[in-house]
Length: 333
Ligand SMILES: [Zn+2]
Image (cartoon, rainbow, N blue to C red; front, side, top):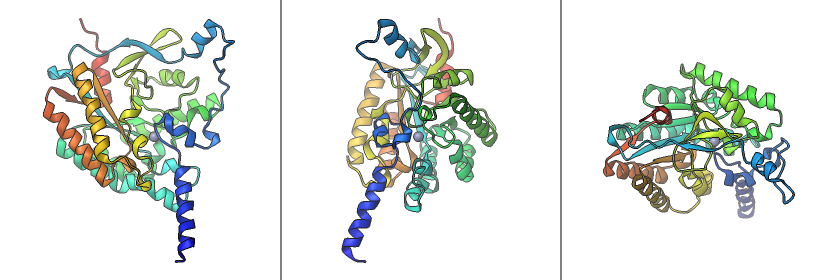
């Protein structure tokens, strides 16, 4: 092929990859097209806002009671949750063309099976947050996860839609319901946990989450330990198992085909330091991975190294998010 044409094609491919929307990552939002911006009217906080207006503006989903127990099951010092957002092709909704789609399809064909083998070898459970249509596109992938009988499936939207961008409260609530119904049918169990696609919480999203009866949410980032969400100054009864950008593979690697640095070795060092302080503080450690991103060969090697390291510390409780939420909600003396 003519080298200049090849260069042009490469440049176009990289431009396309650069436009791919991020996943559970607020940092990825600027890369998203404008239609992913909030459509609902949200009043900004300005210098003219009153104290009451500012309080109301920030009040939708706040940190309430901290729920870290004095000790975790079996006397463990720390709870460890491995979580995977199974977005696959649905991050390419804007331009569903074969090459871009194949980047996500890798998640189902190769990365999830590899992750399941790793979890089998290590004998640890995980939580998979899955858009309903990811399950539809890959029934074999879902069956393989369920066949292990150790993992949890959580809600992650219908098509990985950005909830604040829907601009129609009834439609947003309906999409949440149909996602729950779809996964309940496909898995034989109603999911009890939710993680917002692209970290998108609209002004009413939390109301819908609460009304749907979720045991826990895992979209917010306001602490390093479980807490009860307070909404408009009222305890909601919904547990938050907060994520962190630092524990998210997407912010380091972006989309898999871009060959991004830092090296997986450096990412391991960050995750290890995060775990070490969680261990010291006796709280919890949640890792957020995307199979088609973190499931690449050089990266998953480091994930296994991390799990091996965590196990070597002892006094660790590997659990699904559901198990953690159920444990922390129990009243204790
Ligand atoms: Zn996602």
